[in-house]
Amino acid sequence: MSLWEYKVITSGKGGFASPALLEKFLNDLGREEWEIVHFHSQPDNLLAFTGLVRRSTQRDWSLEDAVATAAKAEAEKLRAEFAAKFQAAASNAPAAEEKSPSFLEEKTAPNDGFRKPVDTSSDGDPDAPEGEKDEWDQLNEENELPTFFDALKPHMRRNQRGPGMAVGLDYLAKKWDLSEEDVKGALVECGLQIPADDNADPVYVEYDGDLFWVNINRRGELWINTREKPRPVFRVVPGTRVTPEAAVPAGAEPAAAGSAPTDAPADAPAERKPEQQNQRAKQGGAPLPEGPALLERIRPHMRRNRHEPGGSGSATFLSRALRCSEADLVAAFTKLGLVVPAAAADQPVTIEVGPDLWWLNLDSRGGLWINGREKATGEAAAKEAELPLEASTTTAPAPASTPGSVFAGVRLLLQETKTGAVAGKTDRLAEKLGKSPEEFVAALVAAGLKVPEKTREKPVFVEHAGEIFWLNKNAKDELWLNAKASKYPEGDGEGKKPAARGKKKAEPKE
Image (cartoon, rainbow, N blue to C red; front, side):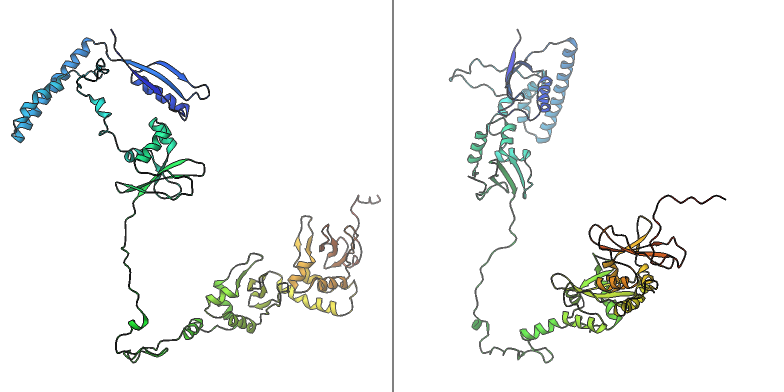
C-alpha cells in the first residue's frame, strides 16, 4: 500500500506578480516530486490560486540501489569509528565511548533521501506521550526562527528618498504568505508605531545597533525603514555666562577704545576702530594703469560677447577683480577716451586702440559694460567713408552722376545674397559706420538713390565702379541697400534702369 504526504499550496491574496514567477513555483514543485491533486484559480486573476499536492513517502528499490546503500553505510560506519577513537584519545574522556554506539546507530541507518512518515494516530489524544521531534518539527520551533527584524533585512532595498533601506508592507505580506493585518500586528508587537498619516513624525525603535521606523506615503502605503544608528561625536556641556565686569581681572582697568593695551609690545599696532577697518578693506592694491595698459589688464577678466564678436565685462565685476572702486574704474575709462552713454538706448561711441575697437554701453538694468573686438576687414574703409557721408548730409545734395566715395565705403560692408548680389540693411550699415539711420539714408539719397514708398516700386539705379546700387523695401517695411555687377558699359548706365529680363532680341542676319 502506498503512503502519501499532502501539502496545501496557495499564491496568496494578491497572486504572483508575473506568469514567470508562477511557472517557476510549479517547476519547483515538480523537482521535489510533488503531484498536483487539486488546482483552483480565481476567475478575475489567473495568477492567484489555491491547491493541494501530494507525494509518496516510499520508493522502489533495485539491486544496484541496495548495494550502493550498503557500501555507503559501511563507509559511514568506519568513518564514525575512527572519529570516535580520535576524539577519545584527544580528550581522554570516557563519555565519548558511551555516546559512540548511539551515534553509530544513527549514521548506519539507511539514508534514502526521504524523511520518515509521521505517526498522526495519537494527535487527537491530549494524554498521549510526546514522541521524538524530527528535523522538520525543530525548524518550526520559535527558538529556531529568526527575529522579525532579521527577517526584514533580506527583503529591504536602498531607500531612494533618504538614508538607509526600506521595504513595503504589502510586499512582505506576499513574500511571507501572510495577510497585511498579521504583518501590522507583528509591527506593533515589536514596538513599532504605525503613523496616522504622511505628516506624522516617525517613532524610532532600536535593535542590534540599527534604528527601525514605519512611515506612510501619500498613497496610503506603509513602509518599514531602517538605518544605522548615528554615533555621537561630541558631548553637550552647558557653559557659564560671564559678564563684562567679571572678564576684567581684579586691579586692572579696561583699555580705552582705539588705544593699545599697556602690556602690549612697543611695535604692536594699536587696535583699529570699525571705521578704520572698513576703510582699509575698501582700499585696493596697486594703482590702476593708464592708456592701453589698462585694457591689457582687464582683457583676461572679460568673457565672450553673446550678441556680437569680441569680449565684454561689467564694471562691477572688473572693479572687484582689480580691487578698486567702480567709480575709479569708470574714471579711468573716461580718461582713456571712452564715452559713458547716458541711457541704454544711446548709440555707443567706439574708439580705436591698436588693432581693436572699444566702447561702453549700459544694459537694461543700468549696469555699465566695456566691450572690445578686433577690427574687421574693411573697417578702415568704412571709417574713411564717414567723411563723405558727413559732407553729403551737411552740404547740398550731390548730383546723381557723381556719387563719390559713399558707395566705396559702404560696398565693403555689404554681404553676399543667394541671388549673387550683395545687400545690407540700412539700419545695420548706419550702426557700423557710427551714424544714425536718417543720416545714412540722406547720404544715399544725395548720391542719387531714391527711397521707395512701396514694396514693389521700381527702384532707381546708380552705377559706381562697374556696379549698380539701389534701395528697396521688403514685406517687413525694412529698407535695404543692394548692389550687383552692371550690364552697361562704364559711364553709360548711371541713373538708368537695367534692361528687363526676358528673351534676347534676335540680331539681323547679314
